[in-house]
Image (cartoon, rainbow, N blue to C red):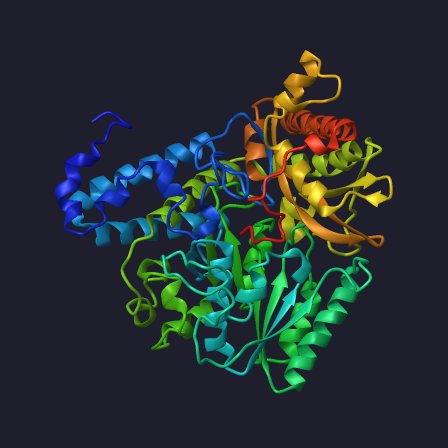
Length: 554
């Protein structure tokens, strides 16, 4: 049978017996937004979800939105389609449950290979999103450290809003990925002992960003206070925040583990996946649970989450006889490793096709990225780290947010991620900076054709510019110099490097130039939007369904 011509209907009788064939044979676009929560729903007639993404390729967009979410690429879409067809064909022979479990284990194998974890002994838990993964991590960490427990949330002002709920084991939405309606903010395990929470934000009370050494002191104090109060601690450390910042330092994490052995479980939020593989292996070797996604730096479709559970902790969890209450609403059997039969067998066998296909798409992006030479990846990201802030700075209206002292990476562990890959900026106004609502409108106008709405010098050239689709990272609310505003983000993702690669000499330099040409288009359209606002601010588009990224985008 010719590639791409598999006849789904030929296996219909087999799948009717499981009650799942109709779902599996649905259009791929529909499956890619299935098996999640309400965040995957399309808004109105836009064809986009609340993060400005389509469940199909969007090649017309200049995409620098990987700090939030990205539309699926053409190559990843084809990979997901092939995986869907393969499962139908395999299940017609071996049955759906066995075939799906086989595909999930293959995905685990591929993910370990991409991340260089073949020898680590770490186990992988799949989840519909980074937020789901964080909730599962908190529930599992309780099995490890016991109760009572306090979650210390590092970078609380630069993580998804769902963390305010998941850190204390509460529902973060109104519907789980398994389709159960829940009350947002209600405990996932009613009657269980309450989890306390201490936030350690990157900004102090006056809005000033804390340098790394001050973040270390604040984290140390928070952990010490919780333990002095008779509590165990789940330390939700931050590898890369919405702005790409990291805290606490490696030294601080090591001191905490040494000073309070057995009383603290470190859970590293690496959902942005802007982390060197050597650093990833070190965290696992130090028994840190690591939260990951395929939908941030690696530009897979939203949402695909997961946990990396270190070898020693995995062995402990494999001996557990009962899952924490609440897991049943957020996971199914194949999400947990086969090495944990006592835990996984207690879960429903209900394949999440959407979650799996989103991961298949993300794995295609990872494969393509790691096929590029490390030297190329290093040079491109280092070159962009120099060129991008200069380009932003050439506008008199835009102000880059510099990374606070000590939050950057180091070459030995971080490899290419020693260079920043998220570039946040605010926009000046007459009286300080544009307010958050205005930044949200600008973000939306960047991501759509506004040529029919121009009020300023609507020449053909400007109309073409205005029609360009420029998808950037959603604005993040901050307080800057006493002004409540929000920062937009130009985020470099794996797909930018893959699309810009061409064989031949000076490949990295040519890639930097190509990516910067696309950045110039984004900044040029932004200047046009600002000029248009000055001429007719009341004419700018408003969409009540869209929100800033104080919503949860993982």
